[in-house]
Image (tube, rainbow, N blue to C red):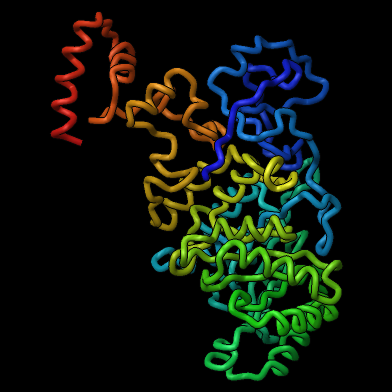
Length: 465
């Protein structure tokens, strides 16, 4: 059965002033465990007059079951610890895994532009690329590390800049040479752990794979990198006992984040959530690291699997803008973040992120334009139809109260629609929507005239799109 977000009563003290307030790009301002659509961030010293409750709430969508979200601040960054157990780090891999989408190649300049936008969005970690893959990728990662990785806002926020490497010294050294210029550099190294990968791709034994993982994490730390992430590639199809063993070894070698990838999108939410829970319960030293989730969308379950992982203990979620990535793509940042904004307090035990959702739409547009990967119209959150309504029943509800058919306000993601209620006239539209649109064009019709125009409109709409 679908869960419906219902409107809630709000005390006048919880409603902020409706006058526009300019906000800086600082991402370390007050964050909210559950999202207030159309919220404004105010300095605590600003005088705010008590607004009219009905006017302030009319048309607003209140997604969370908690009408008074608890404000907090982004926890100080420590590689292997998060001071607030409810805080979830967002690791954006648009520039690395996202660029692996066929036809989505980006120039160094385009990567830098997107990285700047990701910093505005407030992502905790930017996966800037695979430095050993090409000279251009090395240059792009180094450029991002030097510029975006050194821009610290007034509250101390600066994103971690991460570079990917295989488990060999050349890759790891190259990654370090690219990311070391950042305030918070990270090396991410990986090796496959599933039977099919070890046998047919690596052609190595379990013992050899463990030794490679342990020694290369140790090597990354020896270079001076204090933030090392390790991934057992294809963890979703790996033997659990082997995962516990290899993860325990890389923790001893100095890994600070353990990323658990469902590399081929094979698992389902209950299965992936249980995998995270089992790793958390059975891996030696697991309390000294952050568990991360990285899910692919081959069965259309990447967002669901990612959230299942978060509910069972993952505190870093790996995502891409618009869900782009290898094959069917990755978990979508906008879907994961807005689910936690909308349902985090009630369904996920208070989980929240540091993302400023008002930059989501602009970031989505930028990535789409730069990569040439068009967003499907019915894509959740950022699709062209996500906030459009053509059914007459829906249009009638929207014109009366937007909360009837929208659980998120488009303004929350930085999208200003041209029509207040996003009415799209078509053959399924009703009289209420047609009358409203005619009024906006300056036509006032009585009931008889409206009935005549309505049926003439229906006849045209049934023949044309």
